[in-house]
Image (cartoon, rainbow, N blue to C red):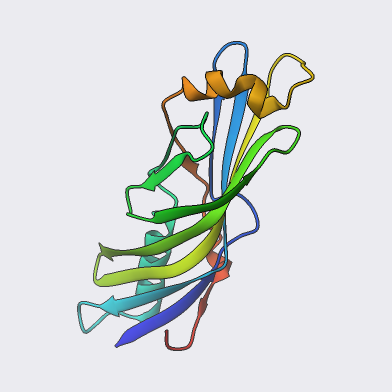
Length: 173
């Protein structure tokens, strides 16, 4: 029997990092928006609902783990994840403090834990916010520091703990 849940993504970053390269401080935050379908299936006959829910929460914790960003100095940085999420950039903007990239993220991964298998699926909106803090200039922050950002290479984002209360029993997916 399948146990179906819905997870509403928070309105706060799901992962982030801070990088200091001497003359420049950089803050990177990844926000995901929308709902994800989470389906748990018991692999043993004696598994109760709370065990399935615990496995679903464990899978969700892995959702934002292993997210990496390459090419911060470009107009189209590459965002990848060890869970295999597919990020498609649709636009970028230049707020006063840095640059913002936005698009959609296809999430479709599974995880086995204890006595259940869990699948997490959905299309989320994403926003990758890159803020820079360095010496003052009249040029926009991103333009002023694009060379320094490009020199970073790869940044691994650190996942933020998930909110268990956002995982609710759902209808069929």
